[in-house]
Length: 122
Image (cartoon, rainbow, N blue to C red; front, side, top):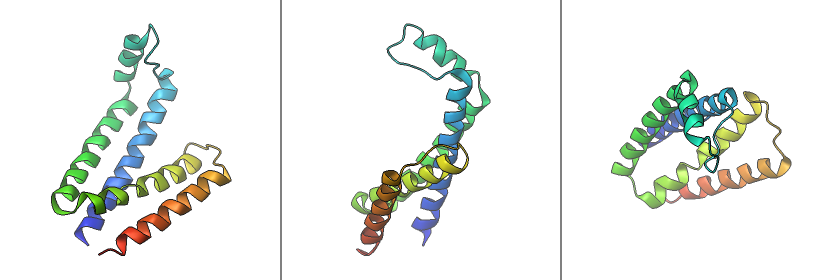
């Protein structure tokens, strides 16, 4: 039960961080690593609150991952983290108003089925 609670926290915090980063990129124009202005683009990102909120949530998510991996097999824990893709799709649709195709929804159903099967190994 403890693993699932920490996993839940990691997934919620991770999805929240993704939204923060997406908002930071929208606010600044994002970055292109092959651009001659990449350092200026990064500098602009560093000046946004959304970027730093994303960093904070990423740190929390990684600490949760460390905790889970300290107590569970990687072959069990890693597939559970794929649930973050499910939440990312929902958050993208609801909060970022992105268009989500039928194929993406079907992909999420397959992920959920895979996680269900993994949990049956316990």
